[in-house]
Amino acid sequence: MESLLAGAHLHPAAFSPASLSRCHPPSVVVRGVHHVGGRAVRCAYTKDAILYALEHDEMFNSEEVVQWESGKTINTIAAAQGIQISRRCRPRYPSEGSGDDKAVPRHILEQIVWDKEVEVSQRKAKKPLMNVMESSENAPPVRDFIGALTAAYGRNGVPALIAEIKKASPGRGVLRENFNPVEIAQAYEANGAACISIFTDEKHFQGSFESLEMIRNSGVKCPLLCKEFIIDSWQIYYARSKGADAILLIAAVLPDLDLKYMLRVCKNLGMAALIEVQDERELDRVLKIDGVELIGINNLSLETFVVDTSNTRMLMEKRGDTIRDRGILVVGESGLITPDDVAYAHSAGVSAILVGESLIKAEDPGRAIAGLFGKELLH
Ligand SMILES: O=C(O)c1ccccc1NCC(=O)[C@H](O)[C@H](O)COP(=O)(O)O
Image (cartoon, rainbow, N blue to C red; front, side, top):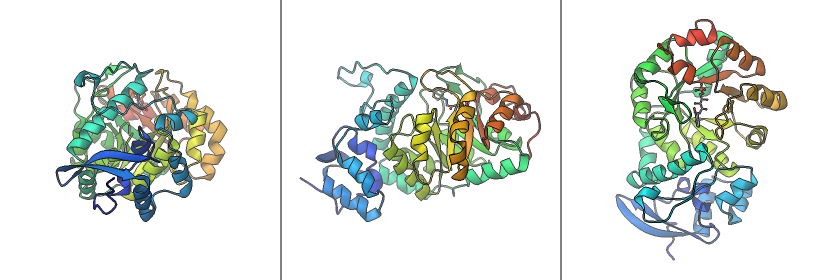
């Protein structure tokens, strides 16, 4: 059995808990193909080799390793945490392969995650982790996402705005035909948005990493959130390499160990992580994690598409004290259309809101910001 312990490409970041435990219990051996200097190397890592690397970089604490050592698959671990999204571990779409892949996703979020697994595995084959890490080191400097939200909240006395760039959504179809992401970002910034969220998923939201990169290089100064369905730490480095200052981590998709690990990756890169929850169980899981600074409460059920703006208020009533004690900034997300909606979210205790559809569908998305707040925002 070959161990790559001495290999320069053996970096702990290559071993996200999900990718290790996904199909093979890591307590046995993990096999894979790694690309070293453009050359594909077939390799097998022993548990000991991986543990040595992890210890060396102190990326995990012992409790995490114990959980990981149990050899349970990610689906077993996730189900025990109430996560309903399963993982498939497929390298290609069924239409591209010969296998009889007949499984049907239970809802759109599961479909998105299954598609994302294929997409990420294909992107990784083209640009392996070590290359994307190198690119992330050459990216434009990180901007302070949370600092921008806090400053805007103080300046305006209303929740700071994360204005979203989303061409389409699975529930609503195409939201805007005449779609120029750079122009929209500039208009958002000129009208007081504190930060900008950019959907990068192509298949379901018609977004792209090119849009993110173009916006970052266009002179827009607002910090940028890469709105992605992150399932692998590779995506975080990739987002950074394209100029993202923050990424989204969805608690309905990621088990606790992945949330912790990915939060650590973000901090190492100087990025913010917006951890999104939909219900009390997810919120409680996230509140158990050290170092969480930014939580998004989504009013949209990602499984059923039902929007209920009272969700934010309900969760803040239950856990607002803990959140305030910990100094965590809360973002109210989805379904916010009018000044009354913004005031309602504000009174629930949020310091920021994430708004997409109601701005993007307006004839002038920049001017629509004053309509949303009932006043012009200072910037
Ligand atoms: O927007 C969707 O339809 C959607 C579908 C499946 C997964 C996620 C989805 N949206 C993510 C979001 O949370 C919203 O884009 C964001 O909160 C802004 O909401 P809105 O102002 O209602 O566009």
